[in-house]
Image (cartoon, rainbow over all chains, first blue to last red; front, side, top):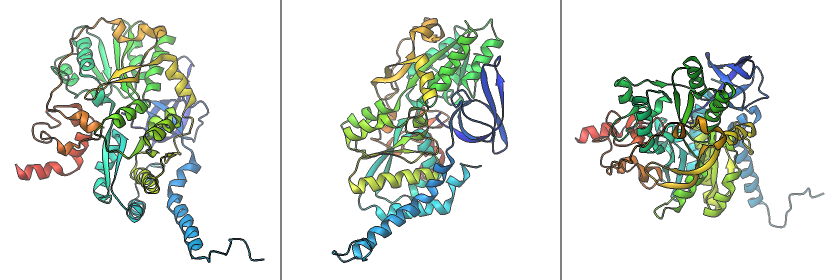
Length: 97
Length: 369
């Protein structure tokens, strides 16, 4: 029931006597109509998460990429920790100068 | 498809799985709250790929499964006796009522229509001014804005032939109920990403603190789930109990304020009966007095006696994460999708249906019998 998938807004028009902003959303080439009432700032070209005919969120592109960077970020943090483990206890991370 | 296909990449999935295997040192029991997550975990074979230490148990996040038997009987009564146009999401149709399902009532001639969106039901009401149209409005927080919006739309047109039969439920009180069960062994949660798209993540902080469990708001694709599990295991191994957001591409910490506003315009919090579980205090929405004329319960006086549940169905224990579908002696034998004893066997979010269709256990059972 909570199934919702992201699609790209292709066009926007006012429907229901001009009261509702409705979008034509492309899901990999399949088009569906969705109400934009819950995402008033969504524009053509935005990716929106659509659930039962209502767009409920605009995809945050920056955050979308973080899932792929997560393991690398984890790796870097671990490396830093490991390096500290091998440093002599009286050595700080600051430059010796 | 952008923002979908890349979260199904097998090579990245393997890297996440390797990382989980690398950091896990002892057994952990984690519940994924949403039935959509259960299906993704089973369908993509992730339960078989996770290290043996990780025990995933399946949560109550299946709205169709927790909709009370009596309400299904009422929907059937409205369609058969009151001759309304009864509109519903498709998932509800095969769920057994006490005498029959909505699908059987439809086969018997009742005007029952499967819709993709409640907004379509309002359109049907406008096109059929001489008929009463009722939308069977089940769902969690994710679906509440759309169902509320249908009432707002109907009210704009002053429709006197549209109403909803509401059975709305909420995730945080269900986590409370699950954790208060003396048999629970849950140590961490993957919270339901789409619910949090609407409500945000703040209401999970008190839960994480009260039960000392990590709660990671998680998406639905394989990579999302694996990242959510990794984040939960990292916390469990470190002994922390924080709320984290794996699904930040969709979920803002404050949720969707416009959607929350729309929900609260139409609905107010109420106690709700959860099928197979019990009444959970302040765990659902009912229609506010102001919109009473759009409430099918108040509009049609429907007095259907409470029917007993099938006692051999262990749906409640499964949805609380105490048992798994395979622990049920009826699974795949006397309980199958074509002849279900309980709702989780037919819903596209039910744990039993996920195991039946995708786990390969049914083939094993057939070889035994």
